[in-house]
Amino acid sequence: MERPRPGRLGPPTAAILAIGSELMLGQMTDTNSAWLSAYLSERGLGVARHFSVGDDLAALEKLLAECFRHHEVTLVTGGLGPTEDDLTRLAAARALGRPLEYHGDLALGIESFMTGRGYQCSSNNLRQAWLPAGSSLVPNPWGTAPAFSLEGPGHLMVFMPGVPQEMKSIVGSYLGPKLEEKFPARLGHGRTTVLRAAGLGESRVDELLGDLLRGSQNPVLGLLAGPYETRILVTSRAGDAAEAERLEAPVIAEAIRRLGPNYVGRDGLTLVGSVCSLLEARSLRLGLADSVTGGLAAEPFLRILAPGNLSGSLAAPHGVLQQGIEFLFREMGADLVGTLDQSGDPDGAGQDPEGEPMVLSRILERPPQGGQPIEISASRRLLGRPREMAMARAGALLAFQLWEFLKGPGR
Image (cartoon, rainbow, N blue to C red):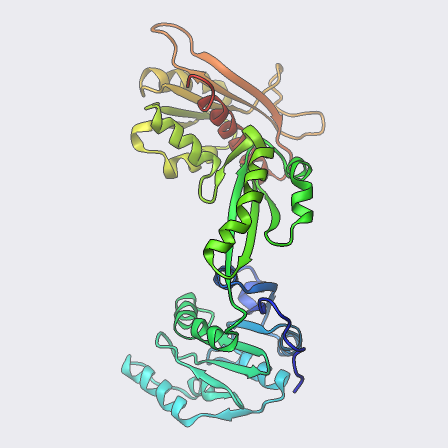
């Protein structure tokens, strides 16, 4: 069996491996790896790599051997069931040179679990009683798939079921205490703060924060682009939460200063969330009229806007959009109406010569009695492709216009 390289000073390095052909076929989304990454990061471990692999014995064996050589902590989910395509136990045995051994007590526990719930225990179920030599059995009170761990000098591999409930239970009861035992002087506190900027593309944010992004090692900064916001992730590692906060504070303050009026907020405060808070603070009722996205642009608002601040949302064809706007003001009591129109150009084509869709986004204010709605702002924008992203960009444009208006002077 190959040995890992001597552990370096600093936080242990970790790899996360998700197993199952259903992940490769797009039938399931791997939420386990994201959850485990957050768990490890909060404890100061550096997650170096994510792997996903189907039920392929050779590929599994190769990846497990590679993880054992290069990472001090490896967390594996999936492939521990009773069927022929559950290959994790065999792959681990081959990768680490530890033959499979039968555990009679484990077989009795599996049989008791099955019969106690009214099921017949088959020979397939008892396959789960075979584990690589030297394994430490990890209790799994939620199912029959036995979790187990394997250790080497300065190294820990934990194999868990892919069912999220079972995996999270094992992490809480076993993994946390085991990490403290295995790496007592090297765990710390990891902290990630998310800053959000609107109205700026990823490249512009990179220009504004370039030296911070590339010049800092602790905290480390990264960017995540999205249609509504560009997120700036500030990740610090320290001995405790107070020290992590102290490390990141000056970097966060400088990033916010550079983002200026495009800074939305931090962590859970999103662009749409900020718009909704401003509407509620000013006791304004918002209406939405849309001939572009079929109502998709309204969904983020519908999820969080208080009912008292929403007059209605209409998905209307281009030809009757004006009637929809008037209905929202006259019948639904809207104070503001945001609109997305499929045609921003005079001839009604709604796209540029290359065929990319164009949107006209407007904000209208309640008219004086008997008057016409007052246009506050209007913006035309090419949306690009593909269609799903274009629809999201349309909604983001409208949200940004609402945000700029509501946080303006005197509003």
